[in-house]
Image 1 (cartoon, rainbow, N blue to C red):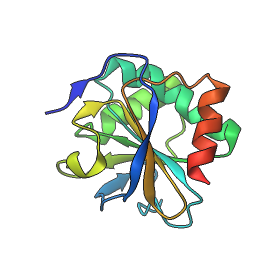
Image 2 (tube, rainbow, N blue to C red):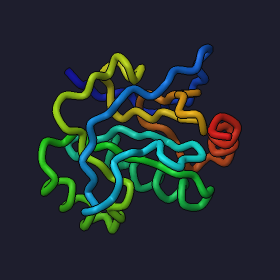
Image 3 (tube, rainbow, N blue to C red):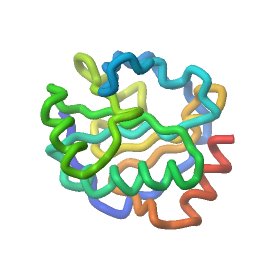
Image 4 (tube, rainbow, N blue to C red):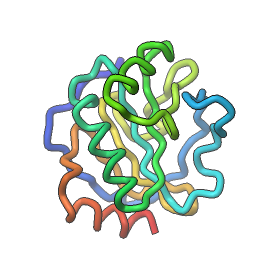
Length: 153
């Protein structure tokens, strides 16, 4: 069961980094690789859904911040079908690159999410989760992006 987190979540470092478990993803961009960690110099792994109001507020800010800061991202929608995700992306003018659907059931225990959306994991170059944010994060903060830079690199 997935639930919604309250706003103003913080990124919290993990005391022990954990490897990102195997994810079964479908790319929203035909022909795009679903191996999100391949050739990665670290990334923000973000979980969201179109039925989640905090997710809809947060996703465009997260994606714009990643582009501006030069960070890779993978945004994984927990929606069941691609058509609803495509309509949202088109309506918001959000590019579909690096947007994925989770195939089957997402096992959140291995991802340290606790079944709460939105959730963001900061993954380093080695493919280890270094920090996480459970709930809506204020991505307009320069301080937040400097923390991400510290953990990603």
